[in-house]
Amino acid sequence: MNAAALESIARELAAGGICCERAAALKGRTTFRLGGLCPLLIHCERPEQLGQAVDLLHCTGTGFELIGGGSNLLVSDDGVDCPVICYATGVPEISHDGLELTVSGSTALDAVAGYAVEHGLGGLVNASGIPGTVGGAIVGNAGAFGWQVGDALVSVDLLTRDGGRDTVGPGALGFSYRDSQLKRTRQIVRSAVFRMPGTDPAADRAERQRILDLRASKHPDLSVFSCAGSFFRNIEPTSAADRRQAAGYLLDKAGAKAMKFGGAGVYEKHANIIIKDSDDCSAQDILELSRMMAAAVHERFDIELMREAQLLGDFDDAGVASDRA
Image (cartoon, rainbow, N blue to C red; front, side, top):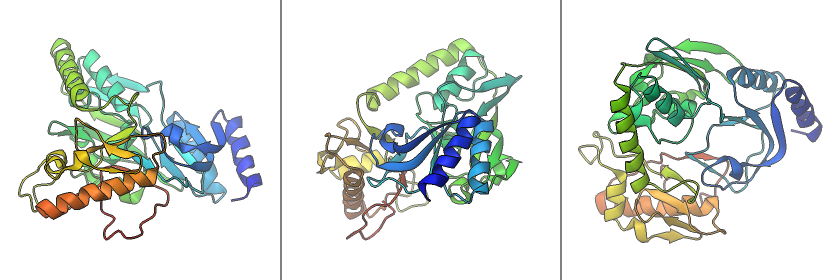
């Protein structure tokens, strides 16, 4: 897309109160702090801004990519050659009516968990400390401790890439372990409604703090370490493992903690967390290390790991037998 067309889009969006950046570095929008440029980065914090941006891009025939909190994302060193919408906000959009809680897809999942605890709603305490936005969490059916986002969902307000809108229940989303149909339809979560069971706030506060402390003991501080949390999914019961097993356990037994590739390494406390281990680390380094780790698990256990982290942009696949990991 030519520069004049992009400038016209940026001006029109800015007139509507939407912030845009030209030739923006995507590494500033991910927790890996890696990745190249995009020609136009469009910051949407509220559902109506998202709709406005998508409508304009569709009307001008402009393709785009969408990111949220960037906590489960590896962006190519070459960046992307189309505009990117960043649908995330530091100001949560949350309200509740009785035991039903409505939240924008741009709101941080942990903020929603905290809100539910403080208002005695319960239901989302297991989401405490999980990074990323509500929208991203629904797309990936994020969860912890046997709980998944889809378990509490009542409805989702969706936006298609051509600006179409629909409201559907969880049954239409094809939820499974760390997956939903939204990964394939590429519909965008504008907002969502959750139904809470109602609980004792004091008990939930204690449980939330316990979970936050547990995560802090096992997971890196994202303000210090550049990573995307667990890089691989755990192993589902229908696989060769016979029951769900932690990918981190298999990786640990396969010697992953000692592995490095270029500037990429593995977090010393968790074998399923790849970190940017030096300033010269590249996104390609991260991906190559992940492939080494997956190959080691396959060789030892005959189990094929699948990425939980999402890739954006083009990567070098030379010499790789499988891109599932």
